[in-house]
Length: 336
Length: 118
Image (cartoon, rainbow over all chains, first blue to last red; front, top):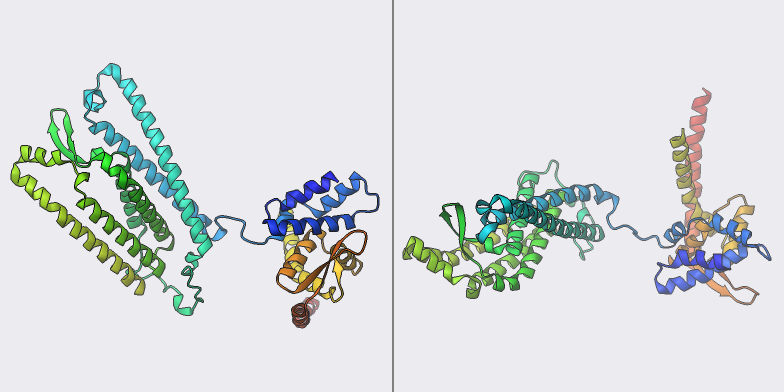
């Protein structure tokens, strides 16, 4: 009977192979039992309709989670998604605008536009903004959703450390209300999130905007970029990865609003990774544009360029110091 | 009105769902196959939908409360289910649980009836 085949296929098509054949055989036997002798197609129809929707039946067979983000997280998922998409869109648009204002080459600079070229440039910029906004939003959507899927599957959100399999105890109860020291303010998280997105986008999309600006007759003009873009390409995947991890941590912070052990651990790991990255990048002499130092010497004197050169190692030390402090603070705050 | 009806039917489904396992276990001290069990329960005025029963049998087997066997001696092969040793234990336990539960509930509902009669 074609109809029965189709019905059984509809039930079992998504089952794992080992149980598929078995359920097929069993269901077929059961359906045949339900049919009278010499069954007509109408009889089959009646029986199958009685069995109900194959999707519902399949659901009954495998009663595992068949959703990505469950009801307990759905509301925060939607609100975080809106927030992150908003930040990403705003940042990308502002970077496109910055680019438009500061790009020195010829007639793309906003201040040198003749009226006839204006429409063309406007269209160009507009298309750029739309394209980068769509790219960014797609990325943000993907990573936020992924974060929530992980939260849902590992049940970190319910206070479980993944792989620890620890039973809930009364000590895990959060105090009421959340003490200020442990509390993570939404505003702070949103601000940090915006900064991360901004700097990552700047590094990945328009690294040439970071550099030495001088005041020209038409306003600020980019004199010499700080970073050698070709060399930076090697670092982009790592920068992106770290930014994504950071973003996931922010999303998690935004949901739980208080420090806890998994959060402190994730924060520490992220800090260590960023410190290593910054250490390697600052030490990489091919990454920085050597003409910049010469340029500064020319404009502001040799002493100024010396000051800037000695700043680099100090910057690394300060950065690592902040990272260590931040990691420790995370653990302290979840103890309190 | 419609929402009350919907709520009612979903509550009734919930009430009955808890008793399904017990009803099925009670009928499996001797081997039965899917459809024979549907008929048996129907004859005893405890009908269960085929679409609910077949998956339930598989789940109970996975939980090791039932043992299954394909019988191929007759003209069409059928999968027979019967209580395992664990299944028997669980059934006895559930049965006594159910008895005390229904007694408690009976008492609660009786009191309520009495109150209404006052």
